Image (cartoon, rainbow, N blue to C red; front, side, top):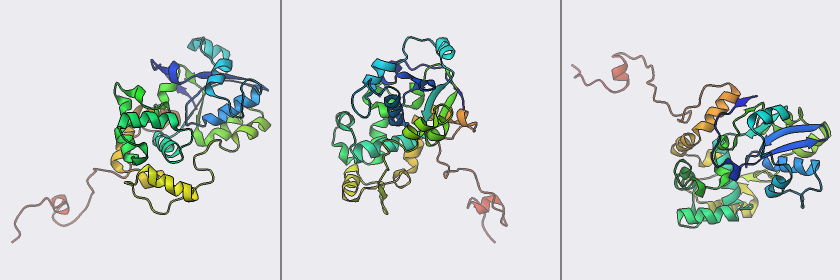
Amino acid sequence: MNFENSILHSAKERFSPDFFFEGEGVSFFYTYIRKNASTSFKMLFKALYPDACPGDVPSVSCMIKNAQVNDLDPKEIDQRFNFKVFVYRDPIERVFSTYKNKLIQRDGAEDLLNLLQKVVGRDPALLTFDEFVHEYVVLLETERWEEVDSHLYPQVWHLRPITYNKVIRMDNVYKEMQELLPNELCDQVFKEPSNSTTKGSTSLPWVDSDCPAVYFRKKYAEGKALPSLRQLLTPATEVRLRELYAKDYKMIAIVEGKAAVSVLPCELSFNLPEVMVEGGLEIALGLDFSLRE
């Protein structure tokens, strides 16, 4: 799937590096987007350049030193690389994954939690998912967008103004990367998701959307139980998130060849039902004020 991007975010270089992967029959350009199978691509870097960075999972800063693409213009990128890759996912799922991973599981969350507490003025553990969105994520559409953690930046903010010709939905990464990598290497890196927030967890049987993160953290500590997006996403918050990430949803619609997604949840409809009863539509809707004889 392809996507022709025409806009470059003015601050992209500060939060979204681009990398080249070359070696073992591999050669492609890749735009790094957090929360979008990014750990798997770190593992690919480690497999291709085993001695470049210390540790089992290379840091982004080390990858930047060794494989960043930063001196090529769009035309030069097209000429050098046959494949230009980025991975995308549903924006709302991505926000929820951040809430779950950072506020509930507290996985590598110190920086985000400190920033979040400074912005909202209270302990992040007390935030519900609704509050996380309406008090914090909404800053993305304001001049204070830099106060939001980069895991939550819209996916289109990360893209270069080039035509990406290998655009991969996150749940298809393994299948799609088989076309770019030798089978053994692809199996090693992409067959099993890396850093999955749900791996080894169980589902909570009952959840209230008013429950704060600290409640879910306790449940997770007791039995690895986690809430689902369906359990916590209210209609109002879904509408707000679709507004905040409208450009991401437009990108996805283009990539997947679908009509643009409405900001309204699919179950919300204001179309009038075609109810045929004696007296017409007015009576069916309770709008007939004539007096009965």
